[in-house]
Image (tube, rainbow, N blue to C red; front, side):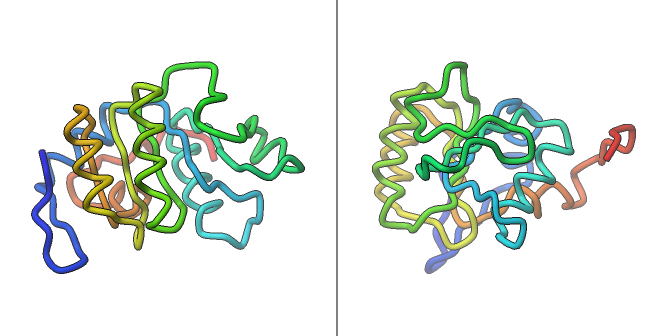
Length: 154
């Protein structure tokens, strides 16, 4: 379901985002950082601890592992199915990432807060992907519709 743009912000029905967060299992995070002070690290940590199968993507050949997870240099290198591609990159990179998400048959393209591109969203949507722009899944997990999984060890 496409979002309605409000300036540079997007709105989505709660059920749309809830469905995505409940249905995806494997999330490739483009722009994952091994630096614990970076927001992408914190989001990866929370999503991983919540039970998602996280796949960090970082093109730096020196970064081999983040939080014990194997780091891939690109989406194309991933050796298993990916449900969602979450993007922590500059907005101008989103179109090419949308093309890659389509190529690997992801089901969702998610642009982090500040990451949005209407052309990329349209491309992904036309290819059958669900699209979320300018939102943080970590924040969305704690909205009222979400039921926390309190049984998980931290």
